Length: 241
Length: 315
Image (cartoon, rainbow over all chains, first blue to last red; front, top):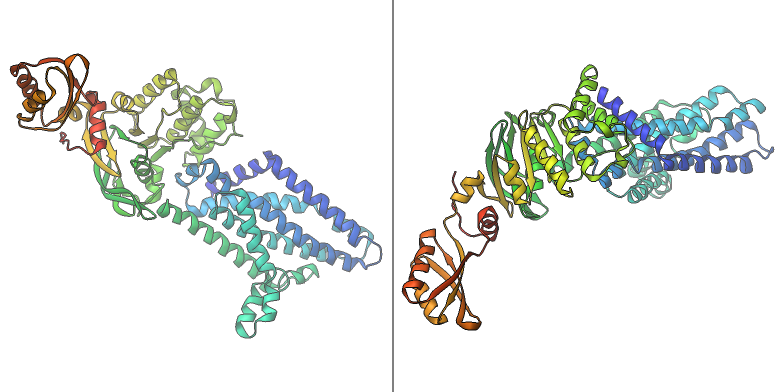
């Protein structure tokens, strides 16, 4: 536990000291706020629909931020040669992966915290419940965790941060469009592909203020599988060199 | 302390190490010597637990590197060619981080970090960011992070590469002093460095150990070599005289001006060398100059070994 908390602190410290971290958050926050104002705050929609729209937009922004945050987690250390410090230490692969993931995750949560002014505006001026906002944010936190874990895996697979971002984004987009593929495939395979969908099959309920246990399990399972694969990638590196 | 038993490492389709076996005792300072690509870094990475061998086994203080990897890593400190340091941290924070990562408990952390700062002479830069440090200081911080958790085994990959002469002297002293408390493995392709710092030398060539022993043992084990003679007289006569001596091969003669002949030949033992010179003198030729072609000394041994010549060394 001590090693994990040490690594979380180190990663968070690295994000908070890096101009790139601030640039990503500032750019995405600016774009998000602008889109929210232009498309949702027109005064024509009901507050419930505005909040639903906000969470729908947020899912895309959170995914983008998660991919951009995760790209450096392992790729940067490989580029600089600092992965030796971790892989040669007494820490296990799980501790390394979990420490890095949680460090990035806390930074992602910090970003989410900075977006709360938008739903609070809707809450103050409209007729929505705090529960709806809470459910939506739970969905964003879970979606962010899954995408960040996928990005972490991508970052462990390649040594270039840019390539890690492209690979992470490609894997995320593939999971985002599963509903389209599921529509073309019949039978149990179509159902499986449909279940894998990151957005349509699972996030929509959160944006409507509904929390389903099955969707929570889906996001947590996806996070776990991606992190497990990341540990396997690190372990394999000891064999492969 | 270290037992490597028939260790091999395969990168893709290329064998980086082939069937390496050796033993290293506690508190020995051992140098791995070899040309670039000889397999030095791969051996060190395997011994540090960073890599696993494709075949064979490595035991550090009785712990198997594959079955008990954490135990092996916990008792090993490794400094790669490029020190793994976070540039945005201060030297002290970096050392605290590395020590904590390797299990130094909180209550002992600060006193231990102060100790290694003292040992590696980093006091004046301890509050500087790693990014601000010179190459020499980075190497020192790298060594400090490698020994911060008091490992039994310290592995230093090319610790003097890129250092200036003054820093080299300092590094030499530091490596020697580490030998008092740790078993130290050092790699280098610089002969003089290995000879001055290490108790024992393992010479690697194309993934294999081609010789091992102390400097004296390596020098004493050389039984042959190549000699270059400058002779006054007829080239063919000189060639014939030398060819008659047993244990001489690969004779090359080059005629030079003023009746001088440059004659090169491989000899099987120092006695053959003496016999060659005697034969030339008895044949009426004047021997002006006799030089060992490989420069002699440890450098000569190394060149012969890495050329693949048959050299016998002491066990």
